[in-house]
Image 1 (cartoon, rainbow, N blue to C red):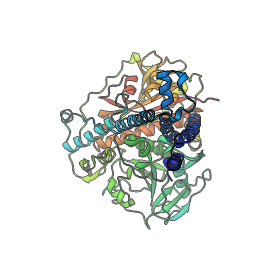
Image 2 (image 1 turned 45 degrees about the vertical axis):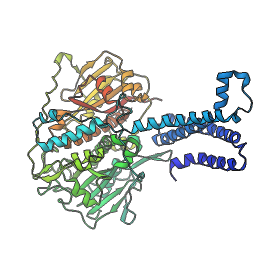
Image 3 (image 1 turned 90 degrees about the vertical axis):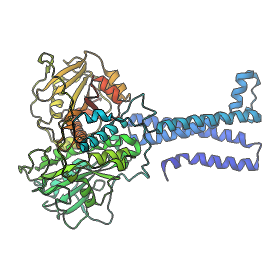
Image 4 (image 1 turned 180 degrees about the vertical axis):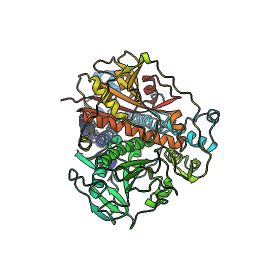
Length: 634
């Protein structure tokens, strides 16, 4: 039975009893209904308050679901209670308190009608509010502006789709009632995917020997540190990487080619049981994995296919979900990269592949579970066949038509960011001028950061989102170390579009204000300040206290010209940029954990206020991610 039915069950029982009493004792039913509904109202108020306190204390979002559902039932009971007692209130206001009888609940037919009218009016107001919240408002980009960018028509169509989706999924106070499309997600999917008839192999428990590079033990450690269950709290299974609302849309599949101790085949990783489930008798070939004829998967010991079950996140976050599943997957992929390197593997992120072929190989419906990333694991020291993750394989690709799925914004944006085999004209960069570099005198040079030798697997195992920080200031060298770690001391893995900003609230030796981080020079450029931006940052992030309490808030944006210049096209560049933002966001967690600090990623914010916080021009950059950093509270 669903949560809503369980919570509404006492009200349904009360309604049934009221109907029964009306038939048996018409004159006494109203007084009895008043008494019992008052008792239920007290119970629902107490439960709502208790769940609210529990949620605030523990920050468990699934408990928040129960909290607001109980709140809706409380509103219904409150409307009933007020209608039953409307006569008492009316007489008090019109005739004075001396005329109110002890049995005001049995007033005249006129007062009963007024009470019923008031209840219906309240319900109508709630219905209007719900209807406004479900309205779908699309903000289309100007066709002339897109055509002026000088891009091929196919690339323009993909760019228009992501522009449309990003505008539709943006949050703002002004658009709160008008930009929330209605999407039918159907029944909520299971939190874990499982193939009950498949052959299963239990993997080594976490913390056991890591094995040698790319044997079964090493693969087991890599998978668990990517998406394994690391803790259970209040019935909620938490994973190695963070997820919006703790909903964990990511699923992992393994194409085992030459993993010592594991039969060559296509496997699914069952994260709940920490086991592999065999899906095919042998490994699919590179063509079935959408890698083309000149394969970028050549020499891979294993290939990881990462997907997302959209409805897991969509049931809670609606149209904004595609942003979240991409960023969440980016967090998981950074853990995968770090864990694979720790066990001695060489990691290569594949930029271009045919999702439809992979989905067909896995037997997936792309509208329900989309293929989002492909990662090749090779023996240590073996270079990838392609020079960088941004290069395309020998075959060319094109952005598919998205009109067929335009009724669902998530279908449309996923189709636009997907690739299919073809022979298009190569996309060109969007024609936006680059932002002028700040003069050297304005830079604040950060101290060089020495390599931090830590057990990254232990850091991943201990990683949790921290929502309470001490009031002490953060040392400047700690901030410098986290920033250097966010840059990963190397080239971007999938996209060069991510920009890093810093809102300094309490950093020793650094004036409060907003800064832009230049990873190449390891310097900060002041944007706003000196100024206390705590309140503005917290207000932009849906007034979440974790942002206002943090010593530092990292804000990540996407440079629109940079992702539009992606070799696979601007729409694919949008996906790559969000994945890259997730990779960078996970490094905040890992660098914080390595230094004994706390971190918390935040994906919910008012897009326009976030841009204003940093004086960013939305025509050039889109804010996509917040991350709080601070000293742990004791």
